[in-house]
Image (spheres, rainbow over the protein chains, first blue to last red):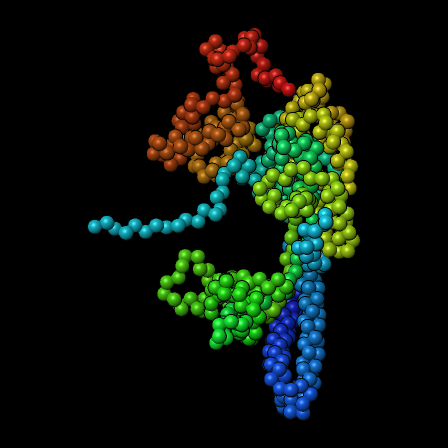
Length: 133
Length: 463
């Protein structure tokens, strides 16, 4: 019975990890689309006079379209972009923890050492090369 | 008419040389740390292997550092073999192997040489991370203004199996792309922080674009997943490498050329401090390793005093030494001491002794070497070879394996037989017969001044 429970736990965790990976991909897709939108907004605002009533753009929000003034649309996009970046970071953190847990459950030593090493904070080349300066 | 001879390029990137200890894969212990009689290339020598296994386990747990272990035994009893086996078992832990005579050099002092060897055996684990955009190029479009002056503009379409997007290119990116000669169908990687572009290869789906491609075009799969990922790479560098990088301008080049010279102690102290800071901040992890010093009796008195002190340091690796001398003179003095090592130094060591091999052990070792050198031998030939090994030495018998194989090939036989062994035995002398020959014909040798009455073979060392 314990074996079945253990297997179920491992499988559930693996499923979780795969869903999170897919989530990261979807977030990134949205992020790239946002980025393209921001760029086209920037080009549009260069062409028209800012703060003019005519400076509007049509934004697609799922099922419907909204006409918004350019600065407002830009602000909305930038906020969405920041939120997406944060969401992706969160997903990655969770993913690291889950992979470490999976390694421990499966008894895969190599995976555990790699996962533990990933917890280190990053060091840049300048840090390493500039110790004696 | 001459035929076109097709030339095949062979991949020699992996040249595996059969060395004296290349058959060793590990210590051959079971889960309870008991040695199996014949396992992973190691035969016999059960007690020494078990002791080595205990030490490996404690090293892996990271619980000892600055300890010294000595392997003492007659020549040909497996000291270096056990050290090799320990390095295989330790895996990731840094393992440096030196011979004590390497310490003496004209370019750097003995203490510097030893310090470098110590620092080479301590690893530091660090992580490097970067935001990277990786994808297959669908299309590159670069526009130049009509007049020819002014900045170029461009768009780059990248895709992965899950998504596709368009990037607007700035001036610098356009220059890098043209310099790298990136084309549609290439799989590239752009580092977001440095802006560096790496071509990973060409996509399989675009392999049929051209009928003939150059020899070093690599085909890779279109990457999957996100376009923009964070790549994290973990490196294990040794303290010595960090010393060299920071010791002077373009220091990292010295890593490859090997001429590091003396490194100032201020630099080393700064580095020690920085690494401790990083460990506290969670940026680095120290991995203490193993330093193996063979022929430890070749070190002189000053080196031993230095070692006494160095082993007490906080960042010291585990030092394993090997010695095959009995009661002999310490180099640099006139005092006799066990193993050629001062007694106060001996006191700090854990000593593992190795015994001579039994006949059955020798037979199994010879069998393993035959397999390793890919030589087929009959049972009788193996028995004769074992006899030879017990009477002369194990190493001499191992040498007879490949030479016997060549002699057997000359007589067009596939297996080495007794007659081949007898032939190489007569062709190549072992140590005892060579000395006998010397004594019999010594008048005919040049510069012969040794009196004929003594049977001593050890030459007096002259420093």
